[in-house]
Length: 188
Image 1 (cartoon, rainbow, N blue to C red):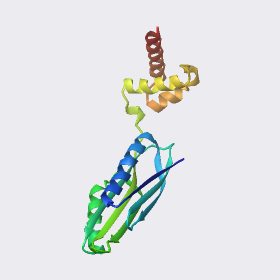
Image 2: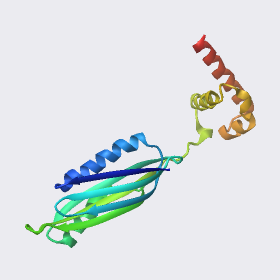
Image 3: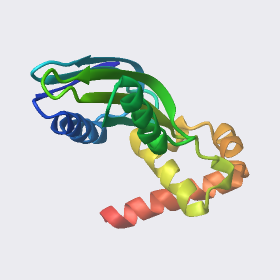
Image 4: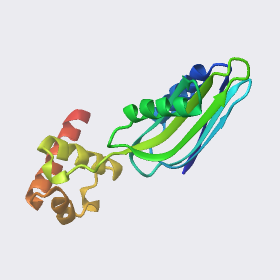
């Protein structure tokens, strides 16, 4: 588990939300895992302040993201309805929403009302159907497994590997033989 915190503050709502989205996109590229929990804080006043705290489980695979949006309207109901439409256009059926927060703010002088929304989501990365892989793809996975075990095929349970890939034991033995030949010719 790893904790990630995104924070932005600005007199401009758009700038504040843009900073959050840009910072999170950069960080998500560097941080593997799935968002398990989220806490979103929206504070309005002279400055718009957004803080998003995420608990990411690095052992699980998922595409992560944050949607931010804001609208203005003549009152809270109007601004919120526009915000709802704007956010719903960005939500895809593959997204699993982890958390969301909606806030409204009316400026004291102009009496303009803003609605701000933030949605934190995961998109699951489904497991590969190993029995549908090409020989090249299967060998790439086997090569990585062999590399992790210092190219010692004795550590692999050939029967289990063959069952996992949906091929014969002979196919796996042949794959391993080819991988070791390629490694030898590449280093020699």
